[in-house]
Image 1 (cartoon, rainbow, N blue to C red):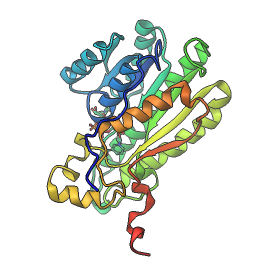
Image 2 (image 1 turned 30 degrees about the horizontal axis):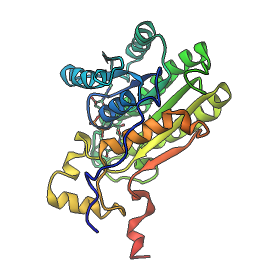
Image 3 (image 1 turned 60 degrees about the vertical axis):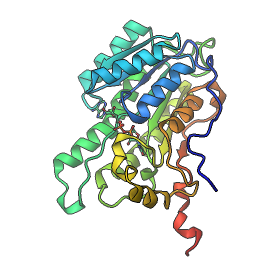
Image 4 (image 1 turned 90 degrees about the vertical axis):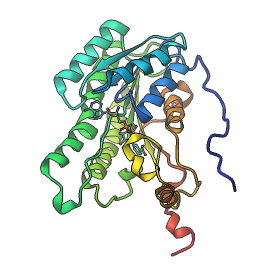
Length: 279
Ligand code: NAD
């Protein structure tokens, strides 16, 4: 079967998220960038959070603004409480409120376990897990203050946590990263349970292998690509847009009854492909 990479697919309905205000963290690169653009295409006004790379963030803002919605780039380190609080205050001041949070910012600091420094461990936990805690908490305060506005959405707010297939697949050499994603799973489900009665929908997306700078070494050479494809039953590496489409759907009222779910967007990576021929 030839690859379906790059083949055409549908388009995002331009009014799906009309009038909603979205914040995407780590939105000047990779998955966050595609998701911010996807939400803008769907009619949302979007805050593009970044920690470094203002120029790229402004390019994302310009692309989103070209859809006729509002966009702005806010600098904040999601692992720093004062910066997250200030970012949310500014969003409420300038955009009026927040309806959708995509807690996406994340990074890797890989090392064999016996060599992993406390700094490497801490950095990954601080950004990937504590960052999601802080952003989700601040967004929740605003969701609760404002409540449901039926003309805008059935929910008082939507939180989408960017997890990974490594919330379930152990990953040698990445103990810090896999632990952070396992933590996100319990953070997400606990928040979903706690906040559902308050009409806040919390869900996660678990991407498989998506072509972004975070994992460039896994797909940039033909050899690495071949190795990677062996782990993917659907036999294609994902694009950032694969995740953006999932985020747009999860944020919309079309999926209003989806609460506390992790949507795996991984081409079947979590299906134990080694067992297709073995076992
Ligand atoms: P990326 O490196 O392209 O993007 C990560 C973004 O997070 C960047 O914009 C970076 O600047 C930002 N960031 C890092 N630290 C930050 C901080 N302290 N504050 C604010 N922003 C910060 O990588 P990506 O692949 O787009 O990753 C996005 C998310 O998707 C991450 O949570 C990652 O773990 C997850 N993910 C990616 C893959 C993949 O295959 N690419 C697979 C599973 C999960």
